[in-house]
Length: 599
Image (tube, rainbow, N blue to C red; front, side, top):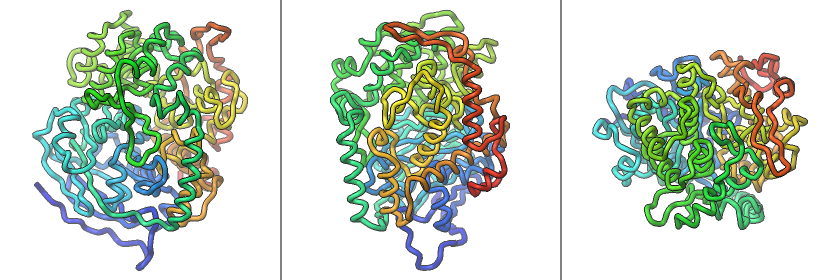
């Protein structure tokens, strides 16, 4: 065991200055030199980036053109000012680096207890650089940070690591998939919570980090506790009144699986690797079927009132969430509900993103012209995780697999597999997939809220009208949410207005909805700058050709036509103009200056 002495960086904060919401401390850990420094940034830096995704991007920027696995590439784990307070759904953090899968900025938001514990240990975030000589763990107990050998854990699955470290507090760790080079390897927090997208588990492995554990008991200072209490109650009332969250068929009762039937009946459920948009056996694979077959109880992140996860009473394992339910059934042509449960458990144990794993297997099945059996799907997942047989190539993701086989079957954007919403059935989602700064993603804007759930305002899902502005504003708002940090589910009920009040109560920083939107705009533009520095432009803001060439599965008065490419490109140009980008999707110096950024 090697305990590293903390070496304080220059203290920039004025003597006697009290910071609220933030701890005012960021730990810089260099695994090459086994050194740790503590930075105390000035408050204006926090106000500019807030925390979470925004602040992580600030620390990533200086090395963004380095290879993803270079020792100097930062691995950032950041909380937000609302973390470890009574703010609803604030128990999350952002993990960010350059993505091994996409080459873009790579980030993933994850819940559990880690963010709360890190904040209560006295840190707003961790910036990890360098590379350990052998597999290691990073253990944080309040202000003490220790780097310990963990070679004996090599190849351990997630549950074994979590059980071994139970006394260490909250644990973020990787499984065999990351150690074996899978580009969509996840970081698992507290065993059941996945930072799945963008392959950041492989970044852990490249630095030879098996786990990070954290415990803390310090209290976060609140600027105005009474104001926070009132703002919190306002948000909770809206949550209680929301049918999407608290209703009979909402997230509290069925988890994210509540979306399954809704997407299916709209004929936009990706089926047979997106060749179809309607799944004939959906009624036997929906949330009701899971509730009937697998008695479960609510579970979720620390300090959350929604509790969207469903945990089996018999095994204690979490049941699949919506994306996994959909992709390991419809997308892969599987009608065995137990196989979905098994695939979900296996991906969590091995540390793999379920969306990309299923998307890659679906592309493989189409290329091989096979309908895979349950056994074959599970065997492929095991081969991917352990780097065996076809799993070696499939572990690189569907884009690399299809390029190697010279087939156009990868349903991905910027190499990241698309989630469970077919864009032919929701035009806003088509644009959101294309413009996402981290590759194919439903959580950068989530126009489904407008187009399908009709909240906070309804819009025609088969129209391009107004979609450019809608996606831009949604991206800005969600960038802010990912920085505060809060869960996006709460915004089925609340808005940035409620969270502006919460943010001000916690930090003492006066703000409003417009100011938070502007901060979100800065964060998104900053990410576009980083991606542009690595060659990403309008060419990459595109969709797989299938969506423009092939119709979906119509019926019951609904026709799912191919997307019109000229309309898509016209809307993309409108988005660029509204975003302040060039016709080629590149950042402009004038707009960057307006946002306080350098190109």
